[in-house]
Length: 309
Image (cartoon, rainbow, N blue to C red; front, side, top):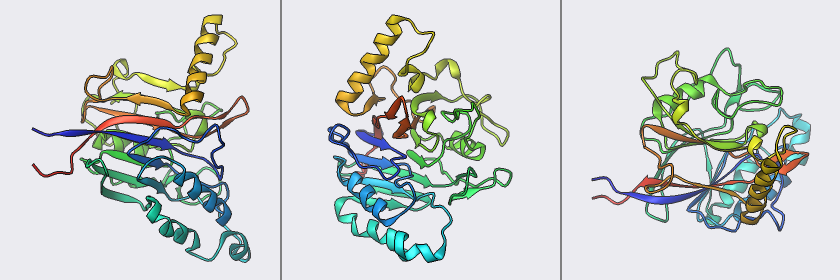
């Protein structure tokens, strides 16, 4: 019989060169922290140093980060503001003693301190949206080689159809990424990029997946609860006083906890059925004028043990 280990993930994205304030610095301990990209605002060395300090301030023995969507640069500015080629990467190499690990695109197998085995697929690639790095033309697509057995998928951008609505009510997610995740059905897929898509949703899959599968055809929406989203936190002009008070209490609690929490282990309200469900998390930290900070996520899931039985 397979044995699993309860594992706590701290998930954050899109900090854009910010450091934690005294009221934002995480309090709870996690087994692993995951940053889904846009650590900096312009990929400057000083921003990378701030980002590394942010990662160090997270109470977790291991911190995973993926590549930056770096803008095209004038070579004459590189040495002054951005450092020599590879210098930012070197900063991460020097931070390995602090438990910080930089993930290139691909699959990584990691034994955690709690003796769980974490298999993670990482990719920084997103459909082209402005002049940034690690982008591809939507009409050309991108191959996300996510194998079955991957526990956590970490990408910068969302899959199409899941927490990817822009303020203009357009879907900005990637259909190729959605298809790859739908085939592999990991326990968790975390991302950011579309700040207004912040939230979490436990998706229940249905049917077989093929190349034409979309979020319309392979998600059982009746069995896919939304854990939280911005609409559940921000005031609405059509909301009742009861709605206002309920949202205010949620924001107050998240401010005290400095994160939003959700657990999907045996005995919880929504235990995650591995192979049948995936928890999607948009962890964009940078918010809007009415909610400047969108709290990170603290997620409990069960991972396979690294011990051989």
